[in-house]
Structure formats: structure tokens, C-alpha cells
Amino acid sequence: MKEVLDFLKECGIYYLATEEEDQPRVRPFGTAEVFENHLYILTGKKKNVSKQIEANPKVEICAVNANGKWIRISGNLVRDDRVEAKKYMLDQNPSLRSMYDENDDNTEVLYFEHGEAIISSFTEEPIIVKF
Image 1 (cartoon, helix red, strand yellow):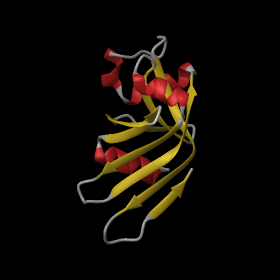
Image 2 (cartoon, one colour; image 1 turned 90 degrees about the vertical axis):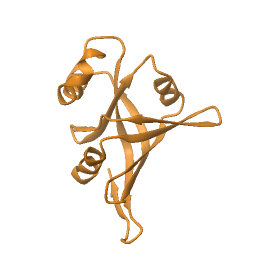
Image 3 (cartoon, one colour; image 1 turned 45 degrees about the vertical axis):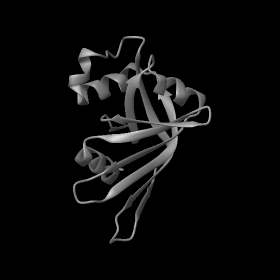
């Protein structure tokens, strides 16, 4: 899990893919943390991405680092409504506190359930991490 998080942190921005009816939707994200041994992301419940995840929790993340390696993370996202999880995510990403608060009705944190990460390059064998 640490290798997956470190890779995402190195990239800074990753792209989260969801599905809306039969149309893929992809957008940039920047929050990723490990909390209670799960990989978490943060968004707002008012956003379309939240509605898409609620309708179909299967998602995929993709990011590329400066060395030309890329990661793909797939799995189901599960909402965690606990204040402790929201607070942890916001404490780790304090710049988001201007938009989110652990006690509001908008902040949403989600974690991967049955996730799989594949770190790939053109010159090395893929590294597969299941979590």
C-alpha cells in the first residue's frame, strides 16, 4: 500500500475514471491517503463524480510519473461517513479546508475495497499490488 501511495504522491495529480450511463468520465484529482490500512480519496457529495460513484462504485485511477512509469488502480469505492476519516483526510490536505469541513454535509471520503494497483513501464515487468 505504501508503494501505491508514494507513487500517487510523486505524481501529484491522478485521473479518476467513473461511468455515467454508458459514457466514461475522467477528471483530475489530487487527494490520496492511507487511513486505517485503506486507500482513501476525497470529493464533494454535490459533484457529479459523487453521483456517478454512488450509481456505480467501480472506478479506475491512472497517473504517470516523471520517469515514464504509470499506475492504474481499480476497485470499488466505499463511502466512509465517519468524522474521523474526513478529519484525517482534511488534516493531510489542509488546502482543502477552504472548501470542505469534516462536519459539513458535502465532504465525502471514499476508500478502495478489493483494490488492485498495477505499476507499469515500457522496460520493466509490471508490479501488482492487491489491497
